[in-house]
Image 1 (spheres, rainbow, N blue to C red):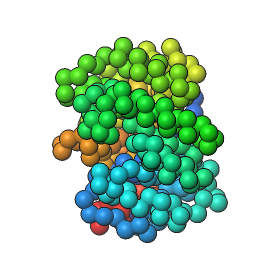
Image 2 (cartoon, rainbow, N blue to C red):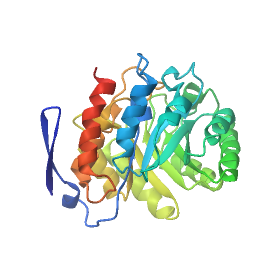
Image 3 (spheres, rainbow, N blue to C red):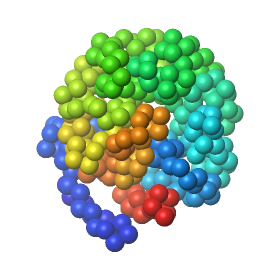
Image 4 (cartoon, helix red, strand yellow):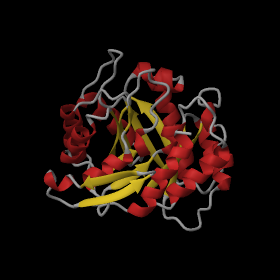
Length: 307
């Protein structure tokens, strides 16, 4: 399958690559992550600009929009206006669900005060070093935070998405293998958490490790939804998506044009997985996203990130 669209004078011709690899046609969930794209930018993006861009994304038909976070403004100053931006959005004509990132009980309480939010995302690292850097907590302390946040989330009738950061390895020498990842996934699933994103936080995952994790974990936990949050360089995106897809992954995070990454990891981050590359691989028909609306949003991203 091929398709074309034009973005600010650039013509894109995407050929669906998935059928060359996958025999099945299960629906693919695409989660767009503008929060991840915005949060590391030094210049503050005006609230009105953020809201206008999010409104374009809400028209695309993404399964979920990772739109903001309720975390310390000292740690992530770009996201200090999440509540204000949320109040500017018109949610009357979209089926896209909203996800906000939180790092502790206080952030969860703030997020849950907004009934429009469907999911709370929490970054739980399987690397102790990164957990301390990212949320200022040890793994034991982070596990207690997860328990508290999950209790609040269930009481509010919402759902938690647990990001297993450093899920494909880490640069700190902390222990990593599929057994370590499974150990934490198993413990966290006992808290009635059902959605997990295996996160290649700094782009160290290679096709072998990506396929190894998904092909081992997905069959073992058929009642869980285990997705991919991959970071990539421009020349490794296809092999990473293919490895996850061959492993049975049906849920993917992306950010238009690959903008952003995790500002808490290190300075030389590779970028987020470009959403347009996910569509180049899977096509639009296996997703809930409208290609024309996506083309408009992709064009609109330039006003947020390039001007």
